[in-house]
Image 1 (cartoon, rainbow, N blue to C red):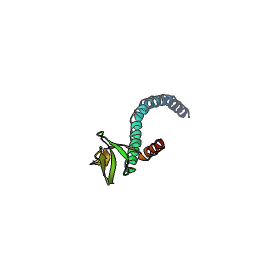
Image 2: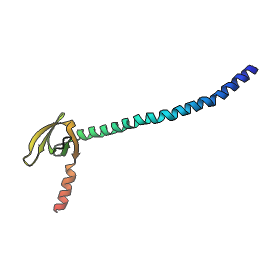
Image 3: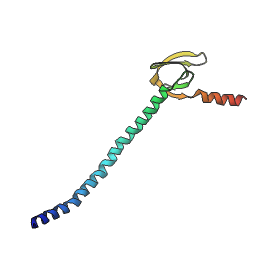
Image 4: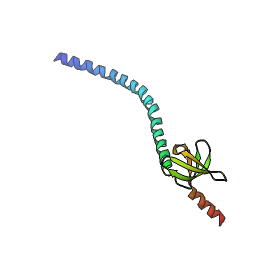
Length: 117
């Protein structure tokens, strides 16, 4: 019986030291996990927004390509987009992924109609 009491006292005295080691390890590991997890989830959110933007493009939208070319969407077909560029409306074909931003032309038309009246 005395051996059991001594054994349990030894185990109890080792518990705080184990918890102390566990705490110091967590203090080191948690920031590392956050360092890699936060950018991952932020990139997923940005990728989702980009995919949604590309899927919602329609004829007549004003866009800017990743190369800096501004134009109006003339045709959307699968993974290709035909842009009308410049005053002569030259048609250029781009990959859908080459579009950096899409501007909503309906908002611009509403603003223009409001200023003309």
